[in-house]
Length: 317
Image 1 (cartoon, rainbow, N blue to C red):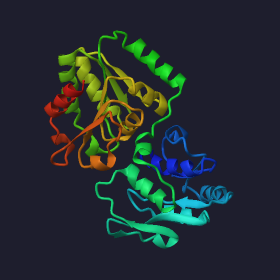
Image 2: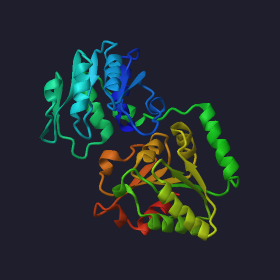
Image 3: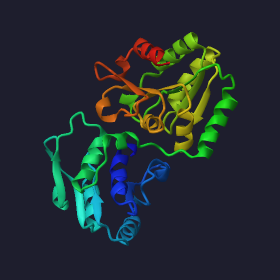
Image 4: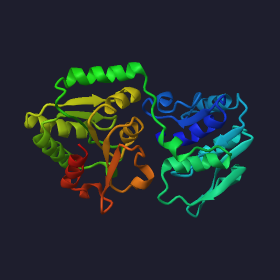
């Protein structure tokens, strides 16, 4: 979702008084949409679990008149999204006619569309190109300036948290995110543990671990290994997006898998190293000046060596 912010910012740049409704699928966990996307004004959740929920959704969807309806198919093409967009009765329905030669079978439901060749094109620029079809645009600098907006209270919370948990200001605070939403994007826990040990042995740093909804098993392996070696650490589990972003923006360096937390860190200005297996960093890596990445030479994340990560880490620290 963070990688689509260029689309929303471009709309608000040209029409600052516009009202944007985001349609999202129902999930098993809460998503802080307004923290992630400061440009939206309303969120409608598409819940297809019953006829009543579907009916209620379309009733809310059609209680407003829309000038534009966007289907930003930058990852995959969803027929359901196109149908919802069509039934919203927007005057202009914007999307893709084809992606890299693959035809959009729902393109007939759009009245403003184009063919896109997006190989190695970053997601932020893909979303912007969808916006450009409708006359909305941003400069490259404006795209790179997109950030999660942190207020004074959130920054104060982060500073207090770090001071309370890591009081020795002469020691570096190094944060790690060993989990990921996809197995293929998850650096092996034993290798991650070896990396943490190696960094700690060399730099005697503080250790901060971040953890998401699906990371309990991996965090358990990492913490068990650190406990065995009598290495202290702090775990942040499912912290709200903006509080997490505020904390990560203040650590000395963050090492993370290619996952949602990577994007939170990237849009918070965190100094970081991202690890990529099968996914393309040219498409997904954060664009901030403090972001660095390592891509597996084989496409398998387990083939990234601990030494390669450690060497880049040492150069950046």
